[in-house]
Amino acid sequence: MCGRFSQRYTWREVHDLYDLAGAARNLQAHYNIAPTDTVEVVRPAGGGTNELVPMRWGLIPYWWKKPLKQLPATFNARAENVVDKPMFRDAFKRHRCIMPASGYYEWIKRPDASSPISSALRMAACSALQACGRGGKTRRTASS
Image 1 (tube, rainbow, N blue to C red):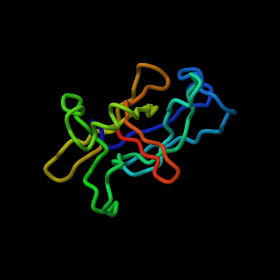
Image 2: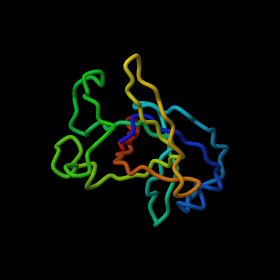
Image 3: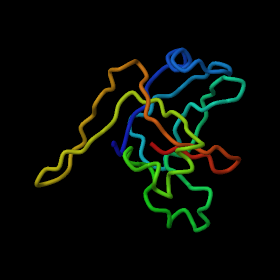
Image 4: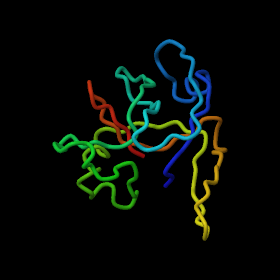
């Protein structure tokens, strides 16, 4: 899974793809989104509609009591064991959301340094990364 991604789409693209509720917004392009950055995610809004809301990229489990600085990296989960891992299992079963994405970055290791390579997602104008998110008053979070 990627460690960084981009979001570059219009309100109409994301609205039409996910049938969003709410007023149109002027969405700004973001080309280098890193874990813990705030990103736009789609989540159920109730009544069968979806909404686009900002969340922090990275999961903060409901049971985590220590300072966030001590939280291990929680922005990637392997599909084959996400149901079993205590860190992700509750969010995976009960609190899913979608992180619309237009591209992602992978790094190629070279002897002298690592270089990012951008990959555009071509499935649609606005593709998605599956995420687990638990919205709250102060701790909105998303993890892909």
